[in-house]
Length: 253
Length: 304
Image 1 (cartoon, rainbow over the protein chains, first blue to last red):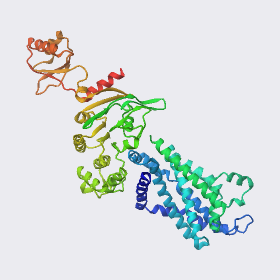
Image 2 (tube, chains in turn yellow, cyan):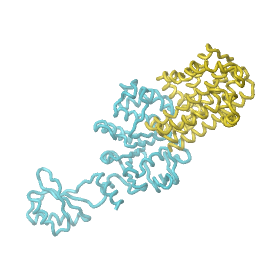
Image 3 (cartoon, one colour):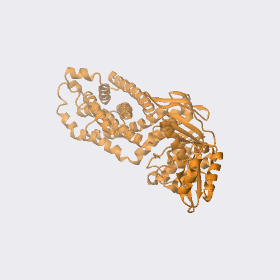
Image 4 (cartoon, one colour):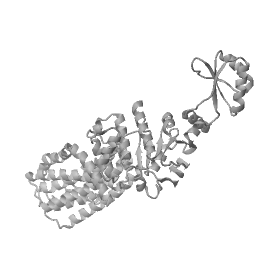
């Protein structure tokens, strides 16, 4: 009970910071919107190629774009943690009796909320382009993005606590994100990829999230891919949260 | 603290350290950089576990119940580390909620009043001066009315007037039976407000005792003031066994300082010698040593 209350307090604090400067929510969604407007039309011409998944260009691309948003949107959260560590703000929170996991989860939930707002904006913007989705599919999709965001944010926090320097954090976190992104079939479906690439992609948890997302948008909510992708991301999110909370306790001790 | 050792790898930041701070007492934790002062504070604050030994805060073990320990401590450092965009009242109320304070907004108003910040209670912290920010940090540390207060260089970088205000406030907390551990390099500040002193050096307790006892460390020194020429007085003291050093005399008198382990015998001999040589002695007084003098002597003694 105390952990829940503490988490709510920490979430409220960081949500307050967000409300004080909501422009970052819009800036964060700019890049996916540019992909939607400037890149997705290119896929229309190859949507008829053999091996391209069913559903049309936008129903294949937008789910991937949402997963990409979850990954890149949350990958940068470590910057604020490093800044707060340096300013002594984290130390001020650590001397309180607030649960350590709440200090991490409260922040991560704020990050998830930002991603959900951005994802909803992206979904609404994609509809005029030709995206087709049921309300249920979109809701599960948002939950999936939240799980991707939670897992990524927690890993990003653990890395930030380990490195404690923006100069090291930025290249490491974004260099690590790129192969994860490319091997998940976000930009182009892995059904078009050679066998060796698909074999490598099989060990990338993000590729299961992308597959689940595409099935959701094609109305296959009960497909095994949806269950598998959601379960993998849920396990990853919980594992990452535990890792981050432990790093949080250890790194500042 | 009872026999507390804290290691970081092979390095022992604290080595078998024991001391206590009683209710209504201000204890100054002194020592050069790297002596282990901050490590000791962090262990007592419940954010760092000792490698061995035990630290009890209000009877609660930092090893077994660190969360309860944190609820009993207020921690102030030289860096206020505030949320710049938050108004003062919201900030204190937020920390009040983190500490489960029953009426956090009322408590925020009460603390603001105690620290003379009522007029700026709705103002954002980013607009506050350095001194006001440090006051906020103290208010934050007191928001849950803790029995133990850990102050790490609380008045550093403050102007003398603001430092004096803060010192007065800290002393007023002693009257309210708080146990206060003051970590500082400002020995004048420590001398003014601390009841007892703990000197740490390379992770070990070098000396502990009442501030007055610590100041009396070493050979007592005396200053004799007189009229006339200093060289004549020096010549007169040759047979007394003291080694006179120049001292600054008041009201235009000349003065010499000397140290002795046996004031009863030596002072009488000094007076006899000076008067016998025709020197007009005005005063012979025991010199009050500063905590800084005593501290430097203790630390230098450890290095040689």
